[in-house]
Amino acid sequence: MHWHALGTGRHVLIEKPMCMTLPEANELGAAACDAARVVQIGYMRRHTPTFEKARQLVDAMAGGINMARVRAIIGPNSTFLTPTTAVISGEDMPSDMLDEATEALATRSVAGTTEGPRAFVHKLLLGL
Image 1 (cartoon, one colour):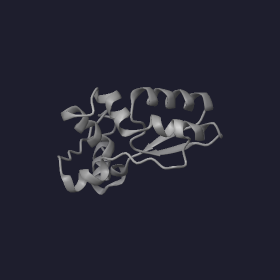
Image 2 (cartoon, one colour):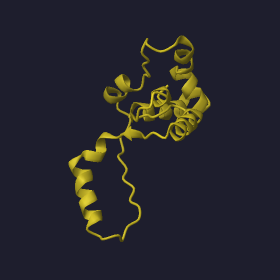
Image 3 (cartoon, helix red, strand yellow):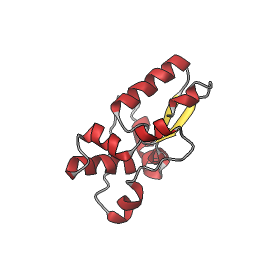
Image 4 (tube, one colour):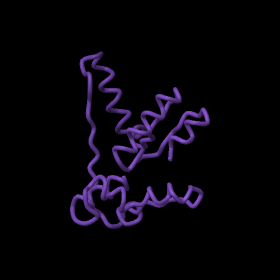
């Protein structure tokens, strides 16, 4: 998937989610190391005014903080979730890769099921 661009000598910017399963993430990490290329995950909230203000406040503390965790909580909302939880794949991929990238396979791999709360949370996170 994403790591094929690495094989062409390109750095890669990936819109989240970077992968749908942990094995895919491991493969991507290995491919980036092998290709000596940068893989960066896009995150739109990094440049919001609130995040920038928080960053200024932390920077002003002159090294007193080693890590800060920011959480953005988005609850179940069908207006937001319905159009974003379906994993859509293009038709420009080889069919064997397209088969591997199906939503059900990824959800089953991560959540252990395609039904119920665990599957719902996996789809929610993919949609964010």
